[in-house]
Length: 243
Image (cartoon, rainbow, N blue to C red; front, side):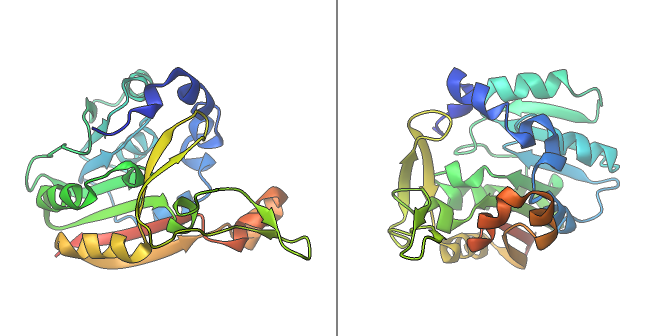
């Protein structure tokens, strides 16, 4: 079973204060690029895997989706999502993505933001998602970039000239990683970029677009503290279609 860290009181309290939790999609700096990967949603059947507070579910409904199903393992996340959603086209379901099997040929789009790096059996999930898509359907998702999940010690260091550097340790040693982010003992699954693509292709997907996201110069100008985030990609964004 996926670690349900989001129902941990300490983690949930910290996560609820993040900009993306307070301001929704507009608080997620990678959102403009991810949004550009989306198809038109008018009349579409949409599945949001790891829907959290339901920000994307409500966005999809506002964009004209016929129905949106948000799935998450966290009851705390779903409780807030239901409370903040008034649109009857949006429904929520609690399920563990390690075993969740959506109905076959039911969706035009599967979407997931920063959830897949928690999943151990990602090959199984990709296979079930592929089966859940209608012919011509697509998957748009984001994960923490493998450069971010690889380091055993995830912290900035300084080189001999005093410049900030990010140590990448054990990049090719895939598997379980434990970090103390918002709470102790947060478990993620590290994979290389190549492995993510191999799993997608192995499930029958066709790659449409890949982006290694870092803030744009314009974003850095507005948020100078993000300057160091241009030193390495922070997120991996992927668009794929049912092959």
